Amino acid sequence: TIKIIMDTDPGIDDAAALTMALNDPEIDLRLVTTVAGNVTVDKTTKNAQKILRFFNKDVPVAAGAKQPLIKEFEDAARIHGESGMPGYDFPEDLPKPLDKTAVEALHDEIMSSDEPITLVPTGSYTNIALLFSEHPEVKDHIERIVAMGGSLGLGNMTSAAEFNVFTDPDAAKIVYQSGIPIVMVGLDITMQALLTPESLSKLEHMNKTGKMLHDIISNDGDNSEAGIAMHDVNTIFYLLHPEAITTEAMWIDVITDGPAIGETVGDIRGAYHDGETNADVCVDIDSAAFNKWFLEEVAAINY
Ligand code: BDR
Ligand code: CA
Image (cartoon, rainbow, N blue to C red; front, top):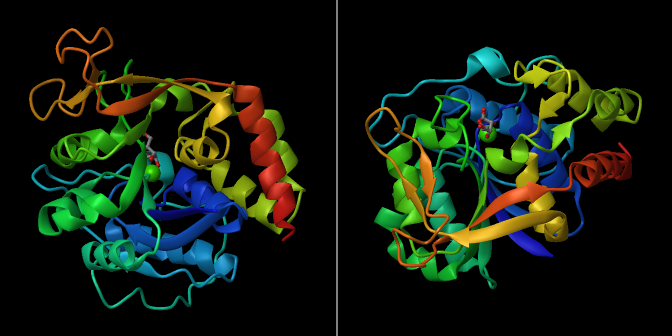
């Protein structure tokens, strides 16, 4: 099994990614940390807990950063709704999150694990950047970072920037300069692997999980006739099916100010960084395989 920690801001696609991570037998989800992003951190924490409660799983949850390192916080409620996870009535009686911060919980879990952990951030990378500056010793105990965010092509927030990196570019810069192997799961593939309308309608009558996902995904403001991007779910798909995704090694620089703030610049010709690389960037995905896998994962949950 692959030991992971998800650092997340649910968020509709985050909720779907959590669903897969919690239920796939190949994945051992050790901890969930939350960050402000799609909505405030109070709401993203509640939403993560709602998903755990839905599946009756007691993976610990620790609440993290309320705002980016330097930049002012701007949410994405226009896409994910005021609650961040609209369209389904989850029970509201939720346990308290851990009595420690996301940074402390990350530190403790990483340092006490007998095997190196894979970090899977699906929100902005504020918690992880804080972790690296406060506890640099964790870096040797991290297998790699499989991060949703960034784009070699256009952004979805500004013409240059993808939302997670745009939200906290200073954190993203720290993470890309950390020296830890990073897989950039960005818009280059997540905008290819849309969940098709056919897949979405199959979910509705599949089982309780399918109905829940159908109802929240149907409320995603980021949809088109071709389908709905399930950005964060691509991280879990990559972990389980790397053969369905093409990656290219390159150096990623993060722009932290000016009109391109939040842009991830890929040195695709190795011209600026002399052929050195710090990331494997996902550039192509088998979209039909993604849809097939998504439906199979949900069907296998049997709840
Ligand atoms: C990313 O932004 C968020 O709104 C999604 O949850 C995803 O993590 C896509 O740009
Ligand atoms: Ca997210």
